[in-house]
Length: 321
Ligand SMILES: Nc1ncnc2c1ncn2[C@@H]1O[C@H](COP(=O)(O)OP(=O)(O)OP(=O)(O)O)[C@@H](O)[C@H]1O
Image (tube, rainbow, N blue to C red; front, side, top):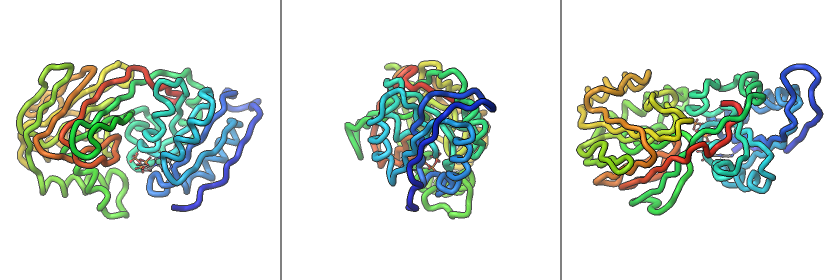
């Protein structure tokens, strides 16, 4: 990993430009996000931060845990500006959920699905930083507990969502996609590879104690946000401010049916289709008859047989959403 830029600070309110903010920021730069995009874009972002005279301390560490520890050592009134993709934000959630510490996002990851849902575009610093002047808004988070398999008993905080089965397998295959492809291109490449090895496994999905679906499936997802995989709108009915999660499951599908379904998932036109099961609620339990790939906010989390998810209403204070 390339060496991080050195820590720096700036102060003094601006007399021109967007309204000044006296709020101090911890700018958490993930140099690896977007396969190095965040590191390459840092000089331009730093210049923009200084031009806006935003007081900040740079935190750039080789891993998410070290970055989290540094943020947790700061007073709760220091806001976080997460510079990277969904994983960069996700790694900081223990310092954000229930603490009141505000979060701003500067998307420079590969998929940027949570930020993209908010209308933030990678590299558009004027929009991401300009919106910091907005009134903070509370958004929901999720807590997922692994019930069996790899990491059984562990709990994880999520902002965007998780997937088991086909989509997590796609995440695994994305790591093998040709490096020249973009975030979306990598997802599409991996999705086609996973399609070739499609298998159906007995699944049970319960939401608030009611069975949403029980039967053979290739994919289940529990979402707070609307999209994953660099732009697939898997959960178009999600609203990060409604105090609810959204659970989705596929029924038995052939390769051709799943391919057609993916074409609908991209723009979010799959709800109501045959073999698509969906409901909103407060808790969801997903159990698979066989160990199945799980992704948490796009990061692979091994193979599991079950996961329980609860929504944490309004748990994160978002500045530029
Ligand atoms: N502050 C951090 N510094 C270094 N590494 C981090 C930090 N936070 C998270 N990571 C690690 O870097 C990985 C990649 O980060 P991230 O997910 O933000 O980028 P991406 O995968 O390019 O974007 P996206 O998730 O939007 O597709 C994370 O999965 C995590 O393992």
